[in-house]
Image (tube, rainbow, N blue to C red; front, side, top):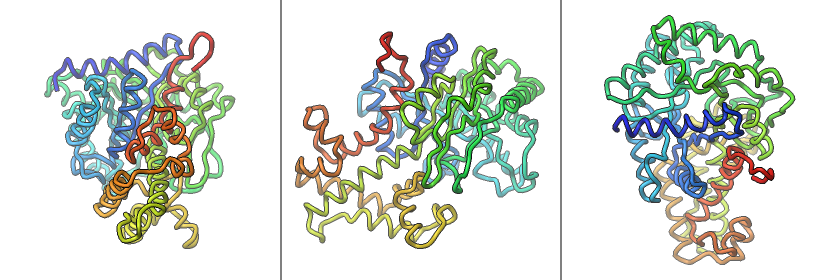
Length: 440
């Protein structure tokens, strides 16, 4: 990728953040998912909004070894850009980011080993042209104390920042923009059932900023500070398997003013999945100008595919059915590593969680060969026989209304894409500046 191409991508973010810091209530949502259907839905939504799309791969999805998707950073980039090309969506409207880049994947190793892997990870992302990099060294490694001090996290972040800057210079691109923060939610949502959630104290957020600014300066990287675009703090939003913690505006009164004197910094909110539209709008108004969403999108995709599977049982004789739901259950039981340590309770509770949990550990199984084959068979079966409108009304009523209105095609994949867009539309609305009349 040329440096000019990279600069244009960074400018989409710079423009949004600059407008927000100038007082305009705008933001950007970040799609943190690797499934091609979700990526397609995100690009289609961005095209409909005449905007740009921010897509981020997480360190467990995509790394130098392939992650759980089997994709390396350059391969994921080509997947995304290929989908954009298919839809005639300009490549310079695609912003790619790397989320939770650090020792996350190697926490069972000693810090020296884990950080060496993290350096290679950061280099691979920057070399592949990703222009938004989340430096996340908040996770403890095998030889670390139970809680890492801010200065340790900041020094490790500076170590990775050096690699990112050196890599950008080596490949001839402008440096990325960066996200920092020690109050980082667990990637993909909480592991355990949550009882309460407290926003980050304002003084702790200020300490995090000071530690990183000092560590970057000590590493001779003080000139990079203006490209630190966001700070991750906990605004009090999260989800576990069965519950969602909604944003409470009144709980962040002091916190949301921490960045008032930082001319280039906004907050980044992780785990905003399942927040109601009004709360998403409040988050943007309160300077969480970057809203991350991931499992909520594959959750919506699963809802659509399971609805289509139930339609299939009404239209297709058993020998020819995909049996998608049964295939998913069989593969999750055969390979339980992605859910077993997360879902508690007896067999019935675990079965419900496997299929319907907000944390959506099912998302790890869509790339399984048997599951993907069943998904493709399901879509092909329904397109072959055609889906009667009354069945769409029964199982996907919002999509039924759009088909009747002539704005949605009656094909199986179009129904899935549109259902994922239902999860994205509130984000697009929240990130858009209200009209003078207050309409959004």
